[in-house]
Image (cartoon, rainbow, N blue to C red):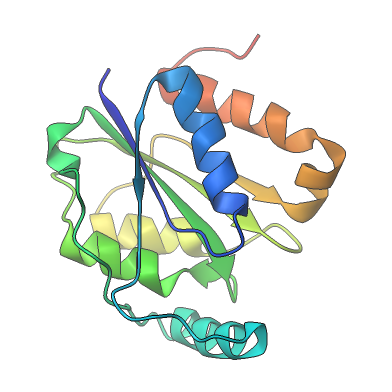
Length: 163
């Protein structure tokens, strides 16, 4: 199955998860990038990004170098900002429509408590639910639990029981 893993990452956590998901699937990686530079300070990024995410704003993303429609499955990775879908990922999804016949899965990374509306936001934008989802929080990464979550997610994507 030809698979694309498209992700946006600021801190590197979503990038690391994307690579760990892509490797066992033999998937291509596509980094989602904002057209305009993000705010320089962490505080400004958290404030402006959180506000944009909570208002469901889309920030312009660079055009995809790989066409999502050329794949059998697209996996989308996003950090959680203000419990919502990241505005750059929202912009990428708008600029790179996912054909209705291409299934998708989604993963998210979060600093704190798991729980967000990011996957619901994605499903609303794409008009369908994802094949599989997982959220990896800082506590998972620090305890090594992220490896188990990624293994289960990859198994769900492939339609098999993790073992």
